[in-house]
Length: 205
Ligand code: ADP
Image (cartoon, rainbow, N blue to C red; front, side, top):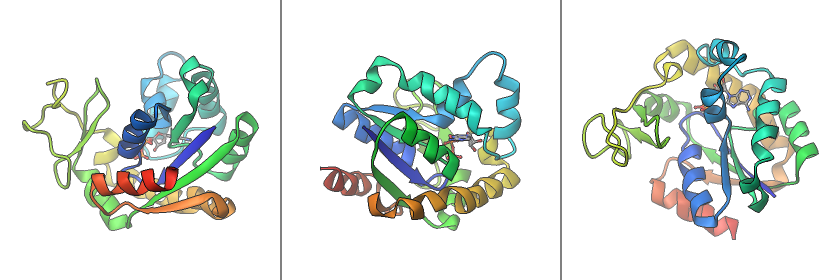
């Protein structure tokens, strides 16, 4: 069974997906991370889309997703974070496995932009910090877990890429929420991380 976490950029869906997957012993698949980790023939092509804030082609992401979902840890259930991003991807997903609950984590575009400016990530453990909001790292610029320097993603520091990603979210991703509205659970993403986790756990059962 697949649970979807859908939300605008910096809505906290990745943070929550990590926490909930751990608590519920589910696999967590972030398609953005899959793309950033991809090596080989598609590397340059992937970067050319991501840095401009565009979606990579559906066929490419679907191929990577299928490979990942074939791994044994996905048998126990999966939280998908960052897929689907358009109606076509949603249709393809339903051919692979049954989609259960869909969590929509909603925030305003203003909040998204403010959070994106302050987002710093750890390359090793994948945790996302936020120096504008929370969680802040204990030591400036260093990961609490790995003690290595944090980095900012190119697509988080480029204003045009941010605008593009938010407009794609509204135009292409939100229609998925309309189409599957009977399965959608709305979660207010403008609360503390702990409160959002609590709200999701209550609805997840
Ligand atoms: P964000 O949600 O903040 O944009 P992600 O790490 O989820 O960050 O995704 C980063 C980028 O990876 C996206 O802007 C897009 O270019 C690409 N990407 C991720 N998931 C998909 C997908 N399902 N389909 C196409 N492109 C994707």
